[in-house]
Length: 394
Image (cartoon, rainbow, N blue to C red; front, side, top):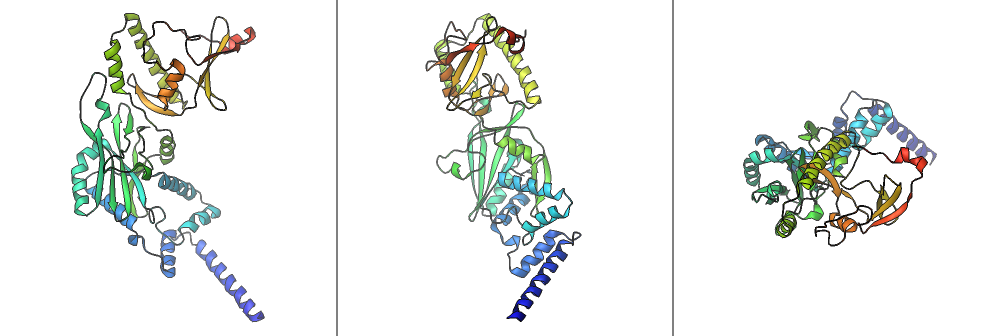
């Protein structure tokens, strides 16, 4: 019995020494080590993985068609960002941390996945689509595309009808690669929402594209992902942060046309001049606040309470304070007066709270501190506070 214990201790010590020797070989590519060890313990090669082969095929065909496909899958981008941060550090603890997940695999980002999301720019897609899809069809890859009316062509005065692709999916066996199309809209990029109608792509299975989104323009960089050449957003973490706040709501063109049909499109000269001045002021605010990273939206700032939100107003001449109460809301992008600005995603509920259920009926007189149905008196600023809390700009 004592002899068996001694042998077990010696074996454990030998294995520990061997492992430390392997970790000391920094000059050897840890993916090569992982691959060799993987063969010893019987792990499959990455070329045996269906998703790896599918993405490799897509990448090869896209390159031939001069189409730049870039990875936007949140899980993959986040994993890559963590890996790059680890690789940037040179101390032993980081090397061990980074080595461990890859020890028995040279395919840690792609293999084993059932779905991955890529992106493509609309202009590039338009010029390369026919060649790309014809080649994928020859490779017996199932493909579906969600094609809809181009919203950029729909305005109150314009009725141009043309369709664009919002989203395409490519299925090989039981794995799927989605491609979200990013179209230029003014000075930003926009992607559409997938429809659940007919044979189109189910929303429940999609990471990005369940709803419309707006992003700042971004450039790409070439990377190697598990041995496959792909493109990534130049700043992956910045892209991921935008993804969480990218929701977009469009102007309800049909409702706007109905409103003007009922009430007319003209406005008094003073109102037109006010609108022009407001647009210039808004343009300045957008440039200034976006430039320093301050989020703002059309209306005003709000404070969060238990079951609602509110913003405040002050009457400059008297110091009287007012509170405007709203149901809780989140923020989305929209295009207003040709500018990309944030608005509440729950637009109608927000407007009804501030202007009532008949908000789409023109009102001749409106007092900011009395007319809104959600306004409440909220005290008075003391005169000693006025120099700090009440400031006027002309």
